[in-house]
Length: 338
Length: 135
Image (cartoon, rainbow over all chains, first blue to last red; front, top):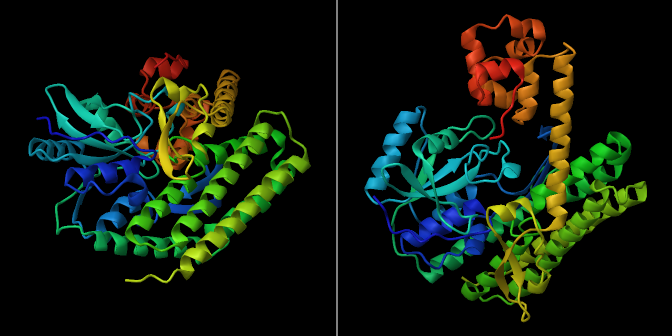
């Protein structure tokens, strides 16, 4: 069974799957930036007591799964989501849906994704793809980070759907169901909810390690990395920061550009003059993140490496923290009309 | 980032796909642009892989010196940390710690060896002899 499914390339997998599946039920208006913003996708956290791949645990976005969940809920779209304890049950359920002509979002691990280049295979279990059909031997796959659609065998698909470890997908599959009509007014309300929730997450989250405070916290920590970890390991830590910020899926600048694009698009629905202005602040923030990445690269490539260089790196993050604080405060002050 | 500043460097990702970047056009409007890669981040990935290769090499040496078992070597090679390996094998952390020593490894039953081989996606023979094939 082969369902008509328009492959949609996106910067980030979850945005792409969300937008792709929503387009499939007729909601063409929901672009990647809108899905990201309505789902309050922008975030920052550095968890100092956890290590991932022997480096710091840093995220520039919200928890996997939340973007899809929040976006659909805000738009009043019912969602079906299933997890499985057995691979056989997961396969039967997937086949049923595909044979009904329903494209399905699947959470998968990337370590065994056959079409990913070797250099990208890490044990990251929260990647998202759309399975939109099958023939005798293959499952038809629309992976939003790829330019083209691709295929996997049943064995390959089972292996990635049942990847193990942190955030294990457990065969998780999900899809939105057609609900009430989505009007522009509803989209406008969803945008406002999304912005308010994002303001809360970035400004008011308790503790020092998350939100705009978390960015400043990381900046202060970075200044101590050279003495604490030694130059080599400190360089690897910075490399990990840059990978989280720029690696496939962020659209550049740790999702800050996607968020800036979202605010521009939001203006079409909620014509508040502040939105395009604040959008440019996020563009500046994204640019600064990338400038910081260039500084970090100088350190992990060994071109520079003095304490002064680490101080410059840390100061970039302090500056970014201040900039994003201003931006979110401005968003918090917006008086919405409706 | 302006559209004309979107980097088009060579990167490992370029072998698979170009990626979507969000950039501004001359009027300041956001549009998407496909990028082949950016040196800054491919160097970050290179640094990560150089570190992994070094860890694999030092694990191999430890095994050859009799200080560790091949489980350590394959853990490094498959980029698995302890929680990932416990999830794939179903063994407790403390028993994996025992299997990480040569003495503990040599006492493993064929069934348990098979679990490790499956988790690491190698044959039992290759597991014991630390033989690797490109895959």
